Image (cartoon, rainbow, N blue to C red):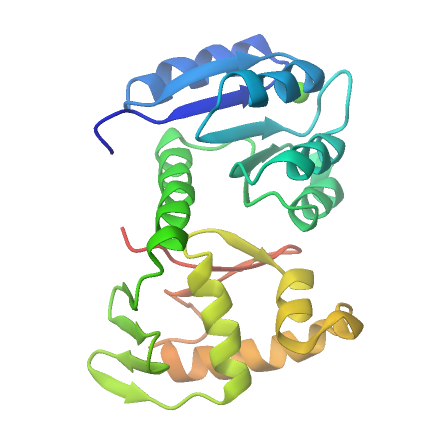
Amino acid sequence: MTQSSPLILLIEDDPQTRRFLKTSLGGRGWRIVEAESGKTGLSMAKSENPDLAILDLGLPDLDGVSVVRCLRLVSDLPILILSARTQERDKVEALDAGADDYLAKPFSTGELDARLRALLRRVVKAAINGETFETGELKVDLARRKVFMAGNEIRLTPIEYRILHLLIRHAGLVVTHRHLLKDVWGPDHVHDSHYLRIYMGQLRHKLEADPARPRYLLTEVGVGYRLSGND
Ligand code: CA
């Protein structure tokens, strides 16, 4: 946690969830301002200058995806989506609209706290453009494009490296299928999910001790992939 505690804008209409988050995140050193509707949230995103936003998808006035689009028009404020099971489709849409990560309800405070810290780190990392990435035994020299597992160099194909590199840029956060396909293969291939399955299988084979139970390259069912963060 940084010295001046980061400010979270919590956009959530359910008072019980707001109370719970305010208490639990407050106890972990976050400051929170609350908005009970999408419109209030959008105006507070300007007036309060938050470090990140937690956005509930089921709001009474605007749908969460519209809130993400409106926020993205004016800022790159990191956004974590809170979604209920009934909002699976909206969740992917919100991520593709520019949200940075999501957490399904119900969730643990520990998990939420870890995700929020991953979001903040991403912002810091984007600013300093770090040259090495490390998590567990995986080490990537980004300047020389070299990948090491437990000290041994692992040879990746250019496409495998591009997938890994994109996941590293979002370490600890989910990256949607669409985002990966668009970034690695181009906009004409956003529906070619089989490409991803094949290459992710190869990457896991090279980087995971047990590819069937990955420690680093995690699957987010129906959404995308997440590289485990470095904490
Ligand atoms: Ca709600």
